Length: 257
Image (tube, rainbow, N blue to C red; front, side, top):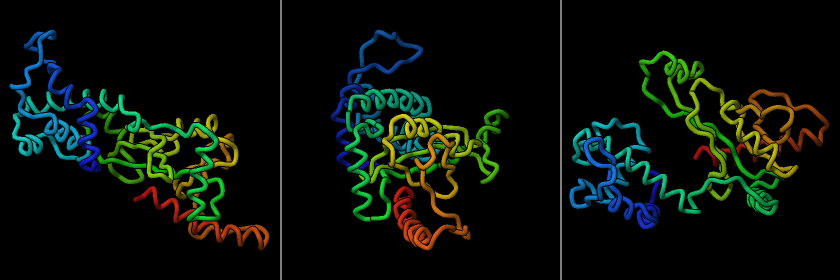
């Protein structure tokens, strides 16, 4: 599910387990000021964290989760909703769980140096950017159906755009945008970070389908040369571009893994 055992245990030990055992679950038929009843819970802290992570990391419907965790429908819904709030509260208290744009010039330089140690031509590259479409069920609501329908792919999606540093961490993300939007529209908050919080000379690596933004961030996103595209310039410029593009492709593929 994208979590190893040490990360799973770290979340439990960072407050998730204590919160689950000491916080009463909101219910319409009980007092909001009532105390927790850990002995009456159907899942222990590890169980509810597993339930929430299954819910977040898969497309299975709740009826499948009912069978896996041996819970009745109302309990599954209640535990997921409450477990999500506890997980969010816990992650906000873990510094390593924070997604943050690079802050200091030294951080940009270190990321760029790491990339250039494997791809010498990519001077100034500090991270890669890519879109992610997650399939969703077709909604009966016409407005939601239209918003999630991607005409190019002929399916319904929720779209996200992620920026990956060469250290393997996500440093920026835009999530849960309508699937009908193009990646470039979803990425507007990231374009602003490139404009306002990125030193001159540094850029993101993208694929050919990713628009490189408006003129005010020209050069801040470098994309692959399209298949069949003619490379123009002097012999030296053509040779440089010919060497640059394969390395750009090689590094960008790290975002696909």
